[in-house]
Amino acid sequence: MSDLKKYVVERKKRDRAFAEGYEEGYEQFKIGVVLKQARETAGLTQEELAQRLKTKKTAISRIENHAEDIKLSTLEKVAHALGKRLEVKIA
Image 1 (cartoon, helix red, strand yellow):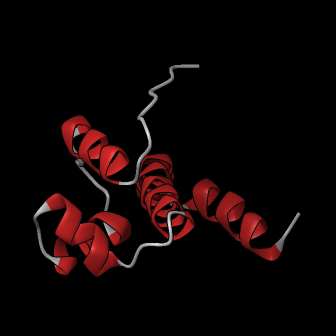
Image 2 (tube, rainbow, N blue to C red):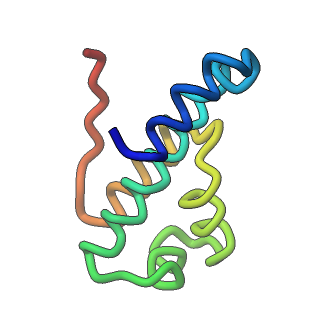
C-alpha cells in the first residue's frame, strides 16, 4: 500500500468529516481528471475547447479542477465538443 493510501486510511479512521466527504470529493476530482485527459487526447488546449463550447478558458479550467456540481448537460456538451459521446453507468 502506498504512503498516500495509508494516510487516507488512517485519516478516515480518526477524522469523521474527512471520511464522510472523501468519496464525494474523490469522485469530483476523477471527473475533472477524465475531462482533462479527454481534452488532451483530442489534442486541444483549454482555449480551443472553450472556443468550441463558446465559453472562456477559465470555465474549462474550473470544470477540470473543480468538477463539483457539474451538470450532465455540461458533460454532454464537452463530450460532443471533443468528438465523443457521454456514457453514464451505474454499477
